[in-house]
Amino acid sequence: MDLEMIQTITPLVVIVGVAGVVGWVATTWMRIKNGYPLDGAWGQAVYPKTDSEAVERVKLLTQENAQLRAEIGSVKDRLAIVEKIVTDSSYHLTHEIERLRDGKEKVQ
Image (cartoon, rainbow, N blue to C red; front, side, top):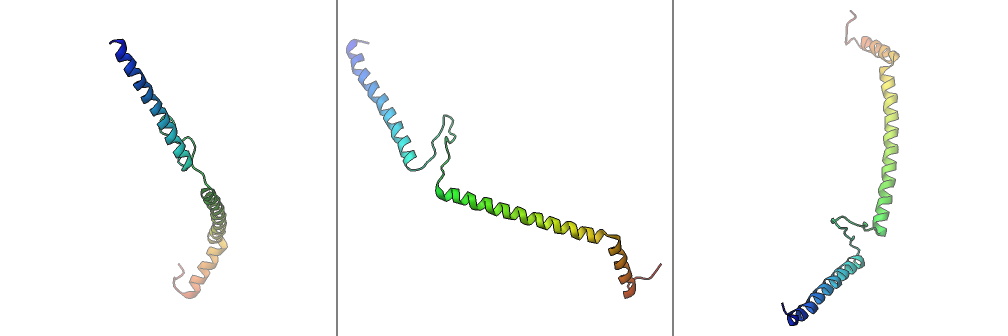
């Protein structure tokens, strides 16, 4: 290669390199401006997009989750009480007496 050819190619390489850096900066700026998450080296999001609507939705879902958990706890307590009543020996005795009074089953 002669000196004249090198002098012609060098500015072209610099211009392409600068154009690449300017393009990368411009696309990153547009992503930030429009609320898109930035990508890391392997494509993972650097920071997730959080806006007031998303934060409010998370608060509402958290509140609903707590209410549902409390309701499930209440239902479990009631079920435990019903199980205790059903498995109680006096319940069985009363049930057997009522069945005998109705005459549905003969005494053995």
